[in-house]
Structures are given as structure tokens and as C-alpha cells.
Amino acid sequence: MKAVIQRVTSASVSVDSEIVGQIGKGYVVLLGVGKGDTKEHCEKLADKITNLRIFEDENGKINLSLKDVGGEMLIISQFTLYADCKKRRPGFIDAAPPDIANELYEYFKEVCKNSIERVECGVFGAHMNVKLENDGPFTVCLDI
Image (tube, rainbow, N blue to C red; front, side, top):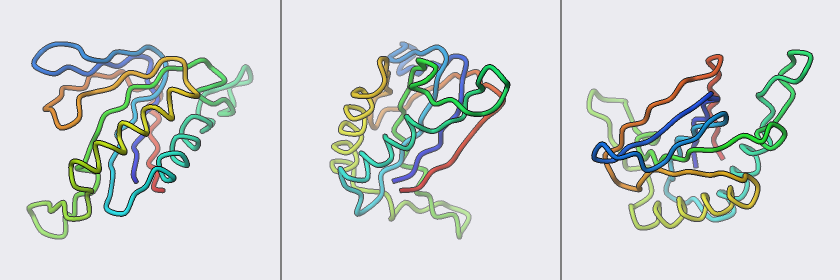
């Protein structure tokens, strides 16, 4: 399981020009599900992300988590995180099949909702437009 986390001041995701998810201060999480990923991987990654300390405290130190600041989360499914770019045309053989990926994406969202008050999402498998205002910018890549 792979994730790209971007700290944002605001973000939204649209499908067919209609906003389907929108947040204020928090994280945009681009989530890729790979072959062999499990619900346990979802739980570990959700715990890591929700407790990741990448917000500044009152002294300007990167010391606070999403939970600490009452931040929000926008989760976008992103199988392209598993792109194999050894050749000029990416291959995606390491990405989980869509049915399994969707099941784990849905589970990941539910696990995050247990820790974060506001979790918004894109639409699995849809062509989405994501708008965000990156705060910092601050971007972190995680593999579980």
C-alpha cells in the first residue's frame, strides 16, 4: 500500500464538474493499493497518517498531527502510484485488481473515519479533478 500525503489549507475533488469531496485544513491522501495488500495494511497506514506530525506547534516546530490540529482528510484512490516506469509507457501489474483495490480503499476510509472527524473522498475508478492549496508545500510519501 502506498500513499502520498500533501498538507493543504483546502482541497476539493470533482467528477463530471461536480464537487464530490471538499476539505479545509488537513491532508490530501493519494492512496494506491497493491497486490497482496490487506486490511492490516490499511490499519497500519491509517494509523501512521493520522498520527504523522507534520503541522507546526506554537513554537513553529513540526510537532503536531492531523488529530492534534483537528484537521480534515480528502482521500483519492490512485492506482498509478504503482506505475512501473522502466519503459516509456508505464505498466501497472503491481496494482491490485479493481475489486480488491476498491474493497481496501473503502476499508481504509472507514478506518480513517474512526480517528478523524471529517473524511471526504473521491469516487473509485472515476476520472477526477483534484484542486488543492498545498501548505508549505509539504508532501510525504509512505509505503506499508
